[in-house]
Image (cartoon, rainbow, N blue to C red; front, side, top):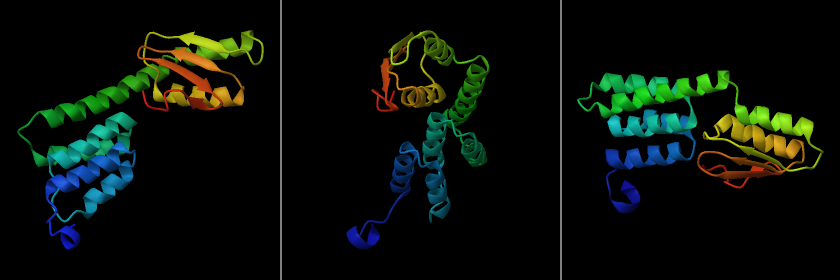
Length: 169
């Protein structure tokens, strides 16, 4: 950037790169990039990575990032709240896992009780979690079935191992 455009990279530029890597799911790359920065990472850098950890359910990186945020001793409580929310969301996912994913049970029952090739429909009042979404994609491909799942936000039509939402919901 400096050589081509004569612009000295500032912390905002580095934060943008971390955010781009994080939003594309490349959390390890983002963390390595932070480690290689010539500037000391600030809260905006760590916050961008921590937000992505929440979205991706990445606990190990989230723990390390939270530690860096705590070491900064910030006056802004927002980053501490974000760290707390990351771990609360991950605990909620664990609890949901233990309660059994209702859409998986409904789909399994439907596969047992309907004729091969018959489309399945499942209605749910909560959002489909990432694990169930992936599981349903594989099930639609493996069982050669069309599976329609209505969750709290949208309709998901699973066919041949892919979802109509394009894995963005």
